[in-house]
Image 1 (tube, rainbow, N blue to C red):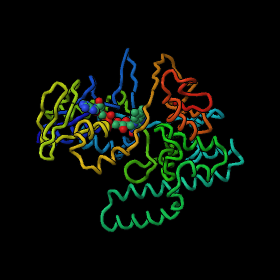
Image 2: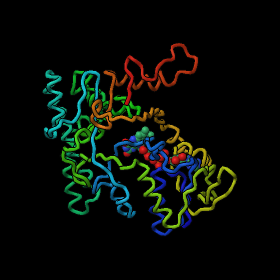
Image 3: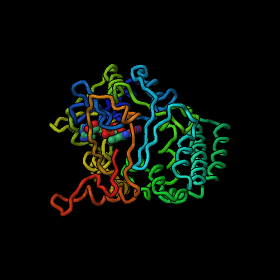
Image 4: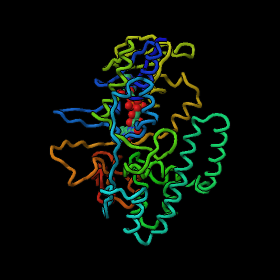
Length: 387
Ligand SMILES: Cc1cc2nc3c(=O)[nH]c(=O)nc-3n(C[C@H](O)[C@H](O)[C@H](O)COP(=O)(O)OP(=O)(O)OC[C@H]3O[C@@H](n4cnc5c(N)ncnc54)[C@H](O)[C@@H]3O)c2cc1C
């Protein structure tokens, strides 16, 4: 089939590579001069800056991203290194210790820093282990068949009973349940600020999955593949652009095209079916299938058109809240920073009021109009968030 793909981010490129390899005629249309979307790496003077992901899940041997690369035959072109990160609060910073101190070393450190919360930390880690157990079973159940699948589902049901009471809680309630110290609450939940999501908006049972112990010490055993939800984090050598080029290479090697500086203005619909795309210069590109990535509202409302989609879907899309924009400040340095920051990546949480900081970011700092009295810093002294 002749297939038009809108967007050269990882979703468009992965779909394109899979389809091109299967013998279809693929053209990817990209509005920007460089392919890669969010996974592009910006380079200048020999330095590279990621505009999106830094440490990635899914590329250790046996993990899903790695399996896709293997299926496409380009895994050896995307080398990655297993790494971890630090976490810094105004009161303390936790870097991975020189000698490995076991999977719960962070909990032990926190007990020394917050002796009054010792029992609370034990309880939280018991909850963490239960959730990891449940998520690991769910992972295994994805690929299991027959009796093995039924057995896994039974075990999942049993494991779920241990956390069921928190199923309708949000992250803030979970932290209030386990901890008294606002510092500890931010410590375990701070990463939601990455998605500009407040603790009250995040599901409690999701907390362990976004704050895996393995993310903070690469020596904690990980079980890549389907066995455990405690996965490994990796940097792609050469930056995410390496990933983009390897996957894009599959499209090109199989006769496909990736056209940059080419904006799709409209998806042509005839008799309820997509029959091609119209480009910004008015050119029509016929296609038997059209795949689109990019923003949901832009794709359905601007490219497909409201009149071409069911009313229920329009309502559903309209109700979908957009994530706040992310502002990244990229700094190129020409000295070794390891005496100051031992891991390449460190999260700095400068607030004890995560809920307030995120809410202020959503409703106050970012949304003040120019000239509004009191317009101030994005990262305010009363509790901003920076990374
Ligand atoms: C700052 C940041 C950090 C992140 N960190 C992580 C991380 O650590 N780990 C992780 O797994 N994920 C991370 N993510 C998320 C992940 O990077 C994205 O979810 C993923 O890369 C999105 O891929 P995509 O192909 O769906 O979209 P995109 O990469 O956004 O690609 C969409 C492409 O479509 C193009 N396009 C849109 N409309 C048109 C049109 N009309 N015509 C032509 N072209 C068009 C756009 O220009 C763009 O290139 C991060 C994201 C950001 C922004």
